[in-house]
Amino acid sequence: MTPLGRKIALRIARTGPITLADYMAECLLDPHHGYYTTRDPLGRGGDFVTAPEISQMFGELLGLWLAQCWLDQGAPAPFALAELGPGRGTLMADVLRATRGVPGLHQAMRICLMEASPTLRTAQGAALAGYEPQWYDSVATLPELPLFLLANEFLDALPIRQFHRHATGWQEVMVTEEGGKLAFALSPPVPVSLLADRITDTRPGDIVELCPGLRTVVGEVGARLARHGGTALFVDYGGWHSRGDTLQAVRNHRFTNPLSEPGLADLTAHVDFEAVARAAPPARATGMVEQGVFLERLGLRARARQLAQRMSGDTLLSHEAATERLTAANAMGTVFKALALYPQSAPLPPGFTA
Ligand SMILES: C[S@@+](CC[C@H](N)C(=O)[O-])C[C@H]1O[C@@H](n2cnc3c(N)ncnc32)[C@H](O)[C@@H]1O
Image 1: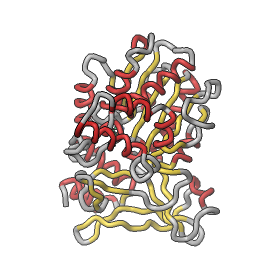
Image 2 (image 1 turned 180 degrees about the horizontal axis):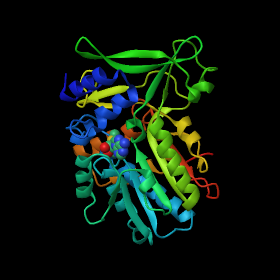
Image 3 (image 1 turned 135 degrees about the horizontal axis):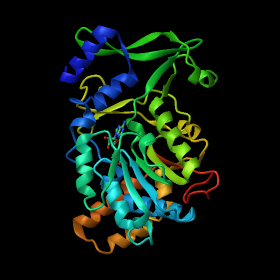
Image 4 (image 1 turned 120 degrees about the horizontal axis):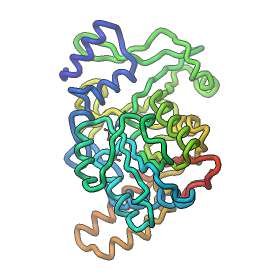
């Protein structure tokens, strides 16, 4: 077992099996051994690659999209330009470069980063040198200002609870210890009021996931948008009204057993965008759009052609591959989805249908 595995096993021996959400929280954010707290996992040398690390176009297009939303709401000043889980700061750096020419935007923005990892906070500081970002631990502590917010591959990192349907109700997936190894087990039947509406569309044997942290984060963002104005964009892998076991562990660009290397592998789950839309009120949620469609609507092809004019050889080939990877159905184009929140009084954000 890894050092974190031993620590978790000790906790289980003392207080009994833990929920999957508790297990994920320990694995990702334990102060000494947590996956995010102790490393920079992104990029080719890391465990996985995200859209902003694939191409500068992702951040540029999202930046201009956010700037348009800001202009459509009367260019409020000052405002919070916020990102949840900013990784290496690459997305925000591309946003800032792309929006330099938008009159008044840089003068009005306060850059707010919500990041749990000290290692990644350092990387973000280096990527955004000269911009004076401020770091926050929660959405609730962000400044009370109009909020223009991006979150790419953030919600998938929030711990989930998993429930197995039995004949008349639910059993929760727990993590326990057996014969010196961590193992999954099912709790006794538990009443889950939050799953009451899933009895009609599931059968015994089905698995349904809940993400308590998502409700807290998105609910707070929705409340702020209603109070102060703004727009929030969530991009992630997932679907609508999800069902099934979506927990996955990735290490060194490969899937691995979620229980075998606690603290050394990334643990994520698919995002249920229906849960995002449900947590939005009093703000509104747009419909969910596939990432490929969304980026095409924002002008990805034109930007790709423009950049390609200055390229040749291997640089051009990798630029073309990156464009495909962001949009193609067999890459990130359909697995990843986008959904935005906006105030009742604001126009529908570009690129979406209601
Ligand atoms: C998969 S990475 C995505 C990074 C970046 N958005 C990108 O697209 O490259 C997840 C990010 O969320 C951060 N994170 C995970 N859980 C968090 C939490 N509970 N609060 C704040 N940040 C968190 C991680 O440290 C990391 O920066």
